Image 1: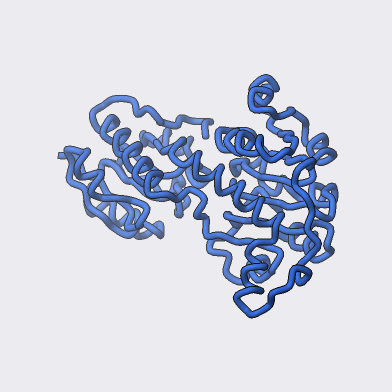
Image 2: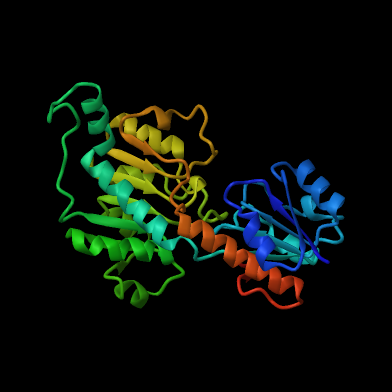
Length: 319
């Protein structure tokens, strides 16, 4: 009987895997390289399923001869060296579509909350201050332009949701055709064009060598003072030092951040500010999304262990 090890993380539902797989399924801490390798070796695991907190490198996987499948209950795989896994005979699979609705909704929620200064108003009222004028000057959203950094499924969901707010939308994504963007009421632009047009930014790019630090001081400098920056993609795509400087200078109004370069963002001055709304990488979460992520990965692990190609397998050079 195959052996499967699941990470000891509340995002993973062991019962889903036990119900789905004809395998010995166990749960173990996998949050350090030492714990990961020890758990796989001790159980001679054929498959491992994790959340994505650990860097999955050649050194991590090397010598784990029984391991044939690595599954991750996430959209992004920026922590996984897919090429190294393939070279070692390990199939990588994930759940690329499970939380599109949730993250798109969360992105819009952060944008609207920032534009209307909702959390800070709530704190003032809770503290006994009933004063319309206590916060920053607010501005109308309709008539503004929202710039989408990347235009995958989540950004497309954001564009569809924005359609009722009287805004224009532009997107920068060199891998998506203009016609696809037009179908969602969005104009395709290059990076400079987005900076020139956008009043607000919504960042959805995956973290790659090309996107690390992409949204930097030049992007913030181009926004108006009422501008809002939302990031529900990956923390490393936004230059956090440049973002902090822009907020300090008052050159943008606010930021809504669900992702950070380091998570949790202990000691980050960004989370201490009234002009930043910070959420704990929760954009993906709903009960339905959690169930779908587990079911999707469990089904692919089952396929892989049966010698079939997983539906969501990721090969060398892919993400």
